[in-house]
Image (cartoon, rainbow, N blue to C red; front, side, top):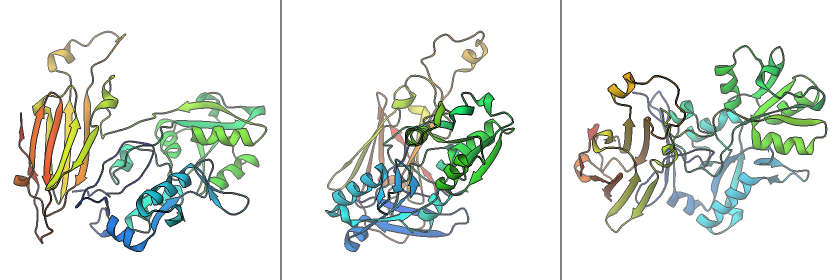
Length: 357
């Protein structure tokens, strides 16, 4: 079974939260089963520093200014995290990462948190669990004004610059394989290549290219929005309710945690909860009835119902067992109670949790 890398990635997407004794736990495991235990909140507080991975060349998110100081929204966010957690913005210790190395830095526990506007994709969700989003972005394409790219069709026969390990690389590789990609490891290398003509255009997050074009005369963003702006599950939900499912409140009580999960439109038999190796996974799946599928002819002019699947995982500790967790589903709301327990050496198998209601 493929294991997931559990991490707190504050990013451009939806994510899971990790619980252990009232603290957030960041843990990692690669596909080979090797693990790198991340620091708990107590360990971070004892050290007095929180290690945060950021970009050094991605204005306006994370970049080094003319004085050699790191600046940007991710930096501001990281300093606020440090202040809230440790009491001072100076307790944030920033480490520069490249786009392709973000997961590796968490796997090896080189950092406690990644703040490097990490867009959610299905492939990445196989390796990491994302924290709640602070921004939504799509892709944009910037190019010289005298040869402005206004449509993807304009890229035929042209060279498009991308950074390795980014959603731009994946998007164009999967959807436009005939477009020639010129790939670089760092954002500054990519921008330098655009400036000196080694490529006809550059694609990355639209917020970034819009900011860059404002600071670089002679360049404009001809394509301001391209690709998806949001993913929350392995199989994307569609319909007007899709963005509202699986919103979760977690309440700490004296003897445990109460999780309240919104699942509007789902029936009890479409909702499942399972415990495996200390991870509590909640999943829900909805599809059209067979007779409705057979009647599907013509073109929809309005569609408000939805189908697909979604899931979230929470680390509750290997000392918690199936019978310890209580679950109830009523009126589209799943409520679970997970008790606090002292850690004990034990081998936990996968179990399904009975949901009442």
